[in-house]
Length: 256
Image (tube, rainbow, N blue to C red; front, side):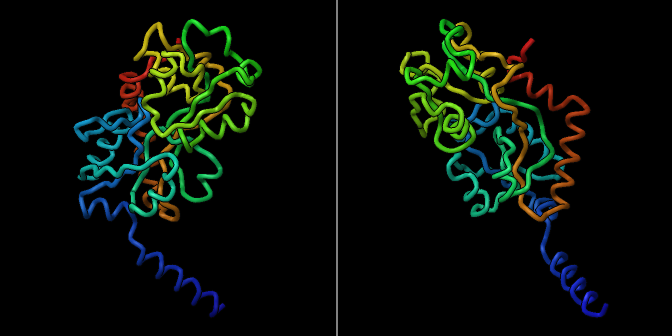
């Protein structure tokens, strides 16, 4: 019993010494956010150095709730995990999909939305790329950014397609329009945004019947329960009051 008490005291002492990100943000008045800045409609880095997107507005809202300002840290999908820890980010955002692999290294917030992988194609070719069977052919020219779940989906489900990986996610959509590639399999949210941005040229196929189920969330540091509980409650309130839906509706063509 005495040994158990000593161990418990040591554990509690260590926990008390580790300052929560919640306390750090409120004290420093700075919310440090990791984002790729290349994934509309969630985060997009403009030429003037400013960010825009759904999660940009959401992070400004989160920071304001803590009396803080947002400090952005640029990352890439390929280096997201490493940068999240090395740059000491309080949170990572930008259309992050919930996966067990990510959950092994970090905590993830309560889900913001349900999403799913769907094909984004030229509208003239809608009938050609509806199913996995149609997509998984050697004649199909598929493009995806390095790292992240789009590449993982392509390797797992479309091994027979011609897969081209790129570091420039923002350039993909014009390349599809220009017929350099045929398909990008991506999250319905991104596909719907690009459909809204390129009407009659790019079409998001079957957004209500995705090829793979996905949830979107924010990435949080492990073992900081106070911070996770705060972020989860903030998400809950923003969803219940309609704040999150209103922000999303400004960016995405909501499927009928």
